[in-house]
Length: 381
Image (tube, rainbow, N blue to C red; front, side):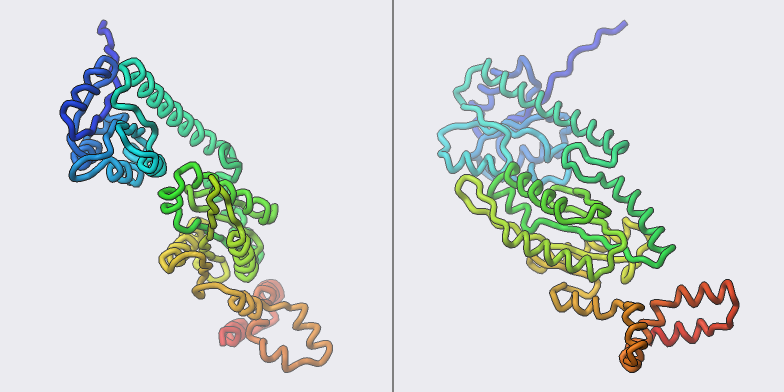
């Protein structure tokens, strides 16, 4: 029977002073495994190749890559393990501006170079415990999301539920010749919001947008938060004209919104990509979401605060054009009753396209000899 030995957490100390590294290492080596690097560039390379590192303890003033640069790289890393690692700043004589900058870049804590052994160890252990707790909560949240239609944190639908529910609505739309639309809403310049105001303020902004979406959509619509800055809204029985009109109202509401944090006024805009079963290849709900997401990316690349659909950027005129192409059979019949025959003839191809499902049903069941092919060709003119 073998006795298991405790594997101590591994900490990366980054400081250009060998004496500081030696002093810190001496204080905490009884509770942690230590890896030392002399500048931010070497520290970054160590993070890339050493997955056992669980916390970074770094100075700010260093050659090649300073602590600010290292912190920024960590928080923008594509690898989740690196992006979420706690980063503690070894605090010397930095002024409040430097500390505030480090916090906005995502620093987890500050410890003084003169801190005692007990204080240093306690604070590092607390941070590691908090990180483990967050990781466990995230795993629990993911497990719940597979079973529940509602995300326990945001209160919105889970992405899995949106996809499942959306496929049902899409199948119904195909059966009954109905429309289904998708919006992807992105908060503009989200990375800058984090850089200027910190993660906490960015999260408050996403919560505000979630609340606005929740109060403005219909009960039958489904909202999910795809990422920190991105939301998707699925709207059954909604043509592109209705979805674009809603997007314009949402855009204006966000333009009017001003948030105040520490006496600083923060304005927020959004970019919205729109897709719909009428005009896009609706093989699946995921296809519609991907199409809307790609259009949102185009809007962001063009500067943000834009709405983009299949015909390009959306404004009031675009909505009018969409509505002009939507045919009302009731309106066409009323025009015929009052003798406005030419008005109906002007839009006859659209009218025929709208009632083609009826012609197809009549021909299938009653075999009247309706020239479906000729009618379909005419409707395409």
